[in-house]
Image 1 (cartoon, helix red, strand yellow):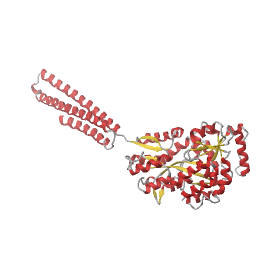
Image 2: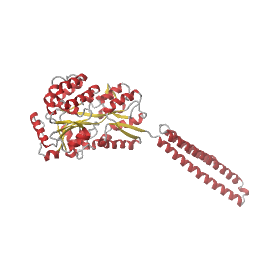
Image 3: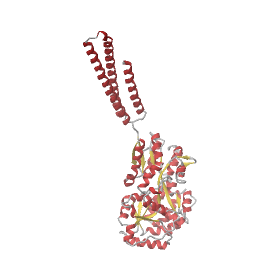
Image 4: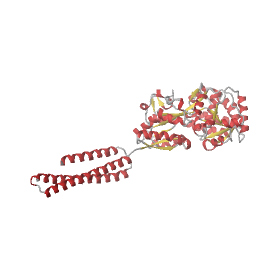
Length: 486
């Protein structure tokens, strides 16, 4: 009997210890771990003592049983007492084993990894993204922390951290060109085995590939379809959007109508960050009046910014509107957006993410420039740095963000277009279905400055900010941009 009890107790101890050593394979809070281990050692000592007591009691019972032949009433009482001792000692063992199990769970809890996602979204955009991460946590049991850092900040932060062998997160959203460049340089993980390109929009992975090696994932993307307006604003002021094939003169007359109804007398709010969305507006003009091929030629470096057709589009179409039809550059999210929504301006050029940033997206309409034959689609790319401490957990999140399930959750709140082809149109809000209809029959194009990147991108942004406030500097602006063009 003594041997059986000892074996059972030891099996329980070994099983609990196995759970502990499993927990120790993940690094965590070592201070908490040390305390928990000390408590665990004490509990296991208690078990050892209790097992000794059980052995003694069993021995007493064995002696008493051997004397049963000549047993007196007193001897039987002794046996009964010894059996009671065994019952009590076993109860103590059970309690101590429960304590060990609790300590093991405590240790494992302190060692559960938390991975960090770095993304560009704050405010309402962040609120719409966090449920996706929460869904991943529920499915995987992996904790996720979200940190806001825009690509404009990461462009200076990441090279320094990469050089030191570190990174600010385990999954990071960043421009496609940067991911490709730093993947080739060895700073970003090869994720080719995590992606099946057949599950995604054609060509969406081209920006993060080197040959057949894939360095980044494609989350949802954004369409940049044209000028947004409030249907109620147009209705209240008797304004009719121009026809899709309107002439330039008819478009100018339309802007006059919008200006007359706008609180500032200026029809278009110029949203600005570090030079975008001014860059998005400019690309829309280049695509409309130069054709989709011009956008491709500028990306490839086979078109010159200082000569026609590029210069002519600036001189004939964009620059004349900068005086009187576009506002001065305004912070795109904190100033331009609320002022446009309040009626200070009637039009606002922005990407489709705006549908998730307004109080009533059903009141939105969008107007491309007349006769536009193409539009920019920009995917939100993400990567795993080589310097992550949790590569397996980061890979799990990578696969989830690229999945149809994650992207369905995101598109439902508006402002996003899935890159995963298994997300059906029925998951989109009505306003995003409207955006899809606007783009039907038009060519999908890469974002010019996001694709070229580097010094060109920062120069492009800076020069457009200058042009917006000093249109007379056109030739100098175009010369500076051409100097950094591919």
